[in-house]
Image 1 (cartoon, helix red, strand yellow):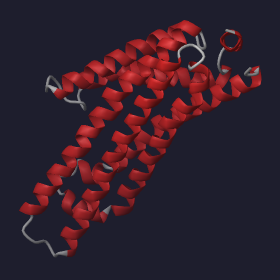
Image 2: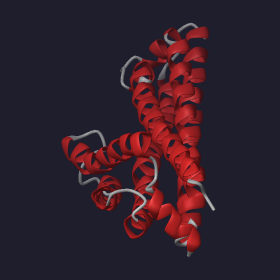
Image 3: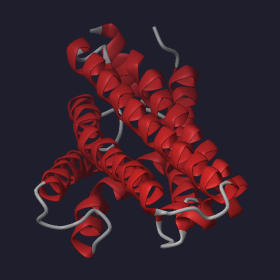
Amino acid sequence: MKSANSAKSAGKVVGLLFILAAASSIVALILYSPILKDTGYLNDGAAHANQVILGALMELILVVSAVGTSVTMFPFLRRYNESIALGHVLFRFMEAVVITVGIVSILSLLTLSRNYVAAGAPDPSTYLASGTVLQAVHDWTFLLGPNFMLGINTFMYSYIFYHTKLVPRFISILGMIGGVSVFLASLFEMFGVFSQLSVWGALFSLPVAANEMILAVYLIVKGFNESAVARLYKG
């Protein structure tokens, strides 16, 4: 049986990993600006190579943190429903894989920029065509990972939290709403209703972001509900 101390410790780890994942994803997006947002990215990417690589490292921290949350929660979630708990780990892992593909596209874009600069400013048309493809790969991974897959795995763990009362139910309800909302956002973005980096995209993503931060703070302070953990391991 899980002790009260181990449940509290596990909760703190999950909370810290959620905060680490959120912080690293924001920092990565900022650091990527020379190679994703600047129109002169063929030159600017190479000029800011260390910044871009640091952004990739931040996203790798995001990947490890995201998988870490699901692995740490699994022993508790499986006591209620092992199939949903496994599904949560699977979709969290798939989210991490998609994000990793996006990291590879960014680093490939950096290599393209370096080759362009080393070639002494040749005809940019071929480089721009390749760059457009790599940027598109990153855009799609940004949509499918932090939106589509995130929506599914957030709903899964929030559903179990709601039924087990491992955390207060208002957090679980916010999580389920956030999961559905960000999943719908991914579908709207796929069909061009609005873009991910838009007011509507931000509004649809707000509930899941709020859920993760509120959940993280709660778990760091309180850990998983000790009586709920005791019930799960008695059942």
